[in-house]
Length: 122
Image 1 (cartoon, rainbow, N blue to C red):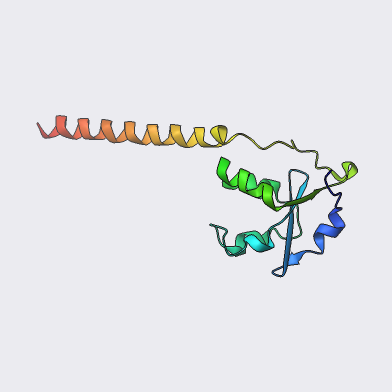
Image 2 (cartoon, rainbow, N blue to C red):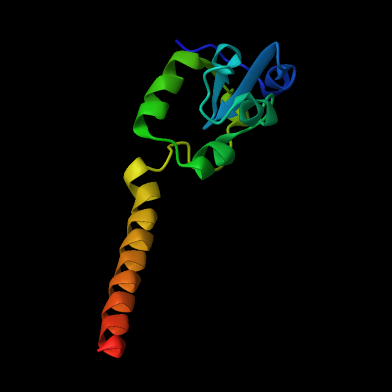
């Protein structure tokens, strides 16, 4: 059974010695992850003591990162404090699909540019 932790309790853990945050209604203690976080400790400290679901999703974390975060989960918000936003993160495939289309569009533009340049040079 998961420990119930209130938002008020999470707010107390907003400094380098104790970094808690809320992601999708779950509470994480990432204090011991500060030095290992690929984005640097400042990224985590900016979300310390707060609801950080949107910040977490905006970065587009990988499935490996989502798996790793499980070891830092220490509890869950009480039901009456749950965020009204969807509690499940978007699959990594969805967050990466737009990037795929941007890359394909860029490659297409480069190919078209090369073809036009060769035609004009001939």
